Amino acid sequence: MIDAEEGVMTQDNSKSKITKSDAEWRAQLTPSQYEVTRRHGTEQAFTGPNWDQKKPGLYSCICCGAPLFQSETKFDSGTGWPSFYAPVQAGAVEEHADNSHFMHRTEVRCAKCEAHLGHVFPDGPQPTGLRYCMNGQSLKFEPTDK
Image (cartoon, rainbow, N blue to C red):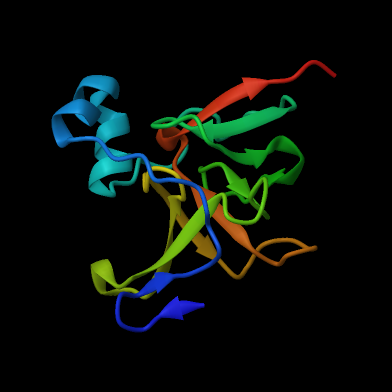
């Protein structure tokens, strides 16, 4: 549910937030990771890490390591960005209204550290019908042995 006053998608999220200064984020992240996750940037399509990754594994937040998406929910959307039909669990991500660039979209952020991850669209596959279109710079892929 979106809070009309703040434009923030609200849900029960008992995790404590990770907050760092801008200098701390800059020291921890590469310039491109910082631009995407802390300044709400977008990498160019077909250039970011893992957009075409097909191995089984877990995608976590590059900023705080929180688990975000499983490879089982990843699909080829043809957009050039890693796309998923569902987060790893309820409360892993937060949704915020984004009216920038003369568009109305739903921004997706890490629920733990509020890193900008990408956007979610209602044109994904079943079972959810959603497409979480994420920036590869915001995700760390950890392969699993199968």
